[in-house]
Structures are given as structure tokens and as C-alpha cells.
Image (cartoon, rainbow, N blue to C red; front, side, top):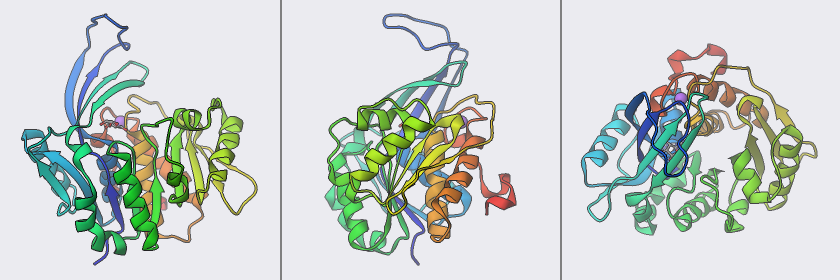
Length: 309
Ligand code: RIB
Ligand code: NA
């Protein structure tokens, strides 16, 4: 049986401190809460798709350590297929040190560790499954060559691709645009990739047009409380998809919730207009920002209004 959504990407243990504000260089401040959670952009996206009801598989690498063992258990608990989850003793499971301030904003340092050892060998083993999947999703917390190879592999097999260039790198290989059916990033990533400011809907539309020209099928730029803009190669005008206002307590991983939901909708009903998928994905991500933490805040199908399904 084919997978709806396969993710080739990262797993990180999130070490989260909540503090009134982000510290300055050289400064020590008191925080009020610390917790450990499951994170990493790839895994986050996969878990959100799974919680909405997609049949999912993760292709990733964790360490042969406590955090890695725990992570594999987390995938199983969420119904994610783990045959393509490798464990290595050559590096530690990826970790993310995260500070969240009172405004729900964050600063993150990731140490990718085992994620960087995911390579062509693992992709080859996953090829039979990838070639039959409905949607493949990649990001940039593993080696970019591995992501690009996975996207090419999917495209050659007519599998729909979503590429999330996060965290953004300035010298992104131009082939990434051509292998992306949907190229989905946030405002700061769009800024870095285009070199122009993306501070409002109008600027996002312009940046989206620039990214679209580089060869992707469609572009989505997420804008937090302002929703997102959607651009399609065969349509002239960008569309702004607004979203309902919510009170954000922790926006960490909201973009991943959006992408996981988008992947779910693309797999479930490929004929649904992309703007409608984006509208629904905005709603799913909007739920995640109203609770602290990354994956722990991602809604299940049962938590969401029936109109989203
Ligand atoms: O996008 C959010 C994620 O980025 C966190 O879970 C953290 O692990 C970092 O990779
Ligand atoms: Na959250």
C-alpha cells in the first residue's frame, strides 16, 4: 500500500526555555519554564500530516542514543512508518536549543548531528516506497544534496513534491526550484532568497513572482497572522489567503504544521485548489500557535472542525 506523504528530513530533540525576552550576547536571564519535546522540521511536518489522517513514512537518521530511541518511539506512537528511520553511532541525535519569549517569538540554534549523515544509501533503500508515494516533502536541516536527490527521485516518478527551504541558505542550488511542485517558505526565507524585503502582502506577492520565475510549479509564502500568498505558474495573479486572528503563545513549528497539513491535503485531494488547501492549512497551523511547544501543540483530526476534512 502506497504512502500518502513521505518526508525525507530532520529529527531534533527540542530543548525549550520560556523566558520574558531573548537574552543579549553575554547576558544571563531567568526563564520560567523548561521542557523537552520532539521537533525538527522534517519530523514536525510528518507528524502533522499523520495526525490529520495521512498514511506517512519518515526517511531520516537519529543517533544510537537515548534521544534517538525516544524519537523512534514517538514516530510509532503517532502512526508514522519507521522502516526508513536509521540509527547511527557516528553522531548524536539532532538537537535544537530554543528560547521562546512572552510574545511567542523564538530564537533557535540547531546542531543537526545524525541528520547530516542521511545520504544516498538510505534514499536508495527508500526508493521503492518513494516512487509510489503521493507526496514527498523536503527541507534544509539535512544535507542539501540529500534533499535535492530525494526531490529529483520523486519528480522522476511523478510524485508531487513540496520543498520548504528552511532554514534558508543564501546560495541555494537553483535546481531546487525546478524540482518543486510547491515551493513553500516564510517571509524571512523569501527575503533571504530574493534579496528584497518581505514585510507585507504586496511585497510577498512580488517575492513570490520572483521565486516562481526560477522554475517552481507553485509558490506559497506564509505570513504568520496575515495568512499566506499563493502563486501558480500558469496563473497571472498572486492570491492572498488571509487567516483568522488567534492569540499566539508559541509560534515554534507553526510553519511545519502548515506544511504537514498542506501535504495531507495534496495527497488526499489533488484536485482541490491550492488556495483552498492553504486556507485549511492556515487554520490547522493557527491551532498549533495557541499552545506551547512544537509537536505537542499539533492538532489531531478529532480536535478540528469537520469542514476541514
Ligand atoms: O521549525 C521548528 C523546528 O525548527 C523546531 O522543532 C526545531 O527543532 C527546529 O529545527
Ligand atoms: Na505551538
